Image (cartoon, rainbow, N blue to C red):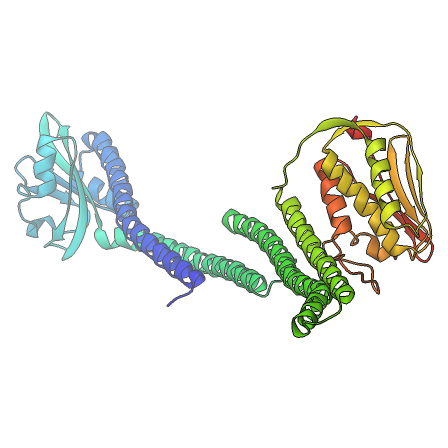
Length: 462
């Protein structure tokens, strides 16, 4: 199968050859006819000269001979009956009657009679032009002829020149076709290279197409295609990374759930098995074991509730009800509950009345988780403040490394080296989701080894 440039070269070559053949053939016949017409006009000119001056001559034979010699043409005078009276090139004694000659017959009917025919007298083809002339009230015919080979000789010279021009044009045509074919081949090579580059994912590789507008448009299209493919490749890489991240997160979730559920489940099984194996166990010990079972069962229930809450927050399935309330009262109540549940910890609270419109239950979860998070990361005092419509929780704990701050609100993420029962790393995830639902943003400021401050503005909820 031929290549594109070979097809183009072949078609152009055939087209050029056919056109030259057609033009050559047409020009051959046209030039031949033009040359014959030119000689006809020369013969007519000579004939008209003879017609204009022959009436003044008394010696027709000598005059005809003189004209023939001076014009290099054969001149013949014929009377009305077809008898040859004078001829510049032949003996009239041996010449036949010309009454039936084609040029004479035409000249009887019209101004000029023209014929190309073979001369029996001179054994040669001639171009003949004849016309009537009146001499002393009698009609005669003057005929001027020239050998056809002389006409053709002149034509062949012209045709040879035209042929040389044709050959020159043909060579130029072949040169142009070859150059055109090379240009197309070069563009096709560029296209192949461009497609190879795309196949090799070399989207930044540059290609210049400029031979023809179509190739330039293909080049523009390939650039756009490369950008789309590059964008798609980036999306694919991101998607692949996301899939890997999700897979890793799933493993982390399973690991986290397994780790967090292991201790309370093991405790429940251990205490229950002890009670089951020893029916005569002391009542106080039985009660203590049952309390342990209840406490650990409650831990498991709380963790399941927290996982369910996380799922609902992410999917947007958690009911959302807005009402107006004093955020200060809500925060103060949560702080009081923590002071009761954590009597050994110091929790300070500085506040002012702040009315907002939000979901009170969700905002309670936010405050509770921020305080719980501070207690887990710090062994010293936790400072809760509500001032100038900004709520903040500050601890003097281990702090957070700068590179971990952006990850701290991710699900199941916990600062490296830390683990607590019943945590699952969901507290700050809850906070982030709920604040986003209210159009708020959690701000985290932390210095590693010195402590952290978690805060958000309530200004948008006024």
